[in-house]
Image 1 (spheres, rainbow, N blue to C red):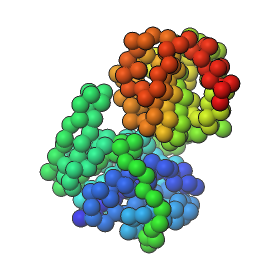
Image 2: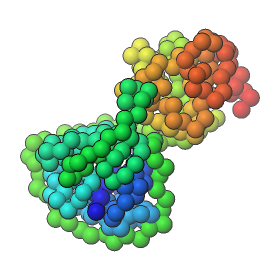
Image 3: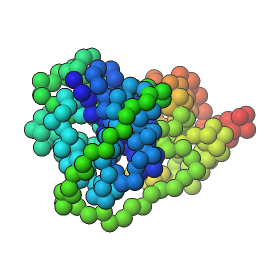
Image 4: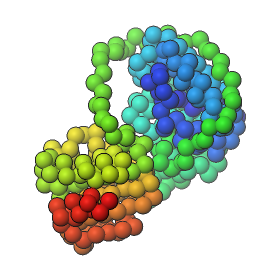
Length: 308
């Protein structure tokens, strides 16, 4: 039994999500191979080769794969698929863009966002905004799976896998890379941050959101927001945490002015320590918080910053 993990990278660095997917693959059992599809990505392949549990790294390089176009990456995966029993992607924007194309072409049912491996063909995944866990068993010959990265600790380094070049697949000819606008920030990336400070509708305005900056600076945290805050225009879309945003599980999650709608809780309740500040003592967020403070956030946050 061989498992193919599709690496996420920018041709320079391996994304942290790949380490979590390798950890999930290791729990399935069998040889774990990692596919690095890109251009001038030898450094990424060398990094992937050092991940514990990886037995081989496949490096496919071509201009068609340089920009991670989903159609072209899917063609590369499909070219290798006959040799594998499982194909695993991270449940990120990139992974979710490629995996359904692969599953459809293989005529199998994709298993989405697994958070636990029970056996080689049986997995657990959250449903109903995390209120229930479904046990899913697949009899498909090839199992195409996306992995909720917060469900698995990142695989450590310590491996020494061989790197093997493979023939790149031809361009699918279905899409063309036009451009990319990347949000730049000195703060950690939200999805992988160890500390997250999030604001909700209680912040009141985009201007008021700025009072979270000193707190995030003190904690070395990424900034997040609830959907209500994003919809109101208080925070940018890529800050959204929740069922329809980013799923996070930092060491520390600080929720400021967030009531705790079920969709938001689905995106952060696996955080190791949750701190909530809200003036409503009945707010649902206190049901999952390890530490709760019933207070006016406009008083509490500056006091917290001064104390820190």
